[in-house]
Length: 191
Image (cartoon, rainbow, N blue to C red; front, top):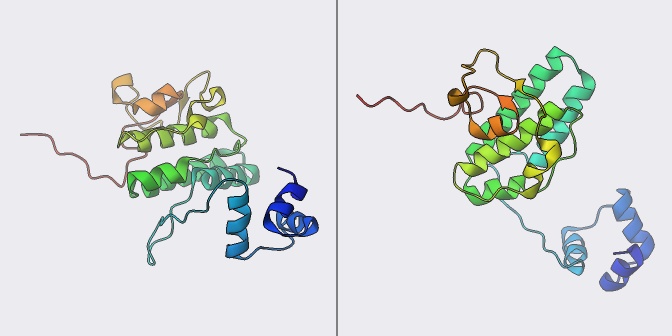
């Protein structure tokens, strides 16, 4: 939709629409809602945290954070920091109800600058949504979200295929079964 079409539908000037798009002016919530509705969509607020807990990031935001980390330090320290960010996202996502999880994962993240982390983020989403049988967004299945080889993200883990999380293994990533599940209580063996 062109700026002129949107402006006409919302009774707003085309230059004002350009200001909104360029970020030089922010619309009120009411105006933003009207603009979104004019495109055939709605704004929806989804609770992603409590007043005392930080909100859970979206997959899109997490991908951007990882890209920033890797751009600042593409070496081992940057990779370690990016893995910590991904682990925190996985843990935060697991604390949400399934519909909120789906909403937080629906928008495809931009490439992080690392095929490993692009695949790992897709695997986290597939793993978390799969916990409840929630449909996985299409971007998770895109070819560039799979590695052509195997990345051992957790060298300390048992690397036997049966000891791996299947969504990660499908995306070409080897991690231990608890690598992204540290917030979950471990099941005790039946005695």
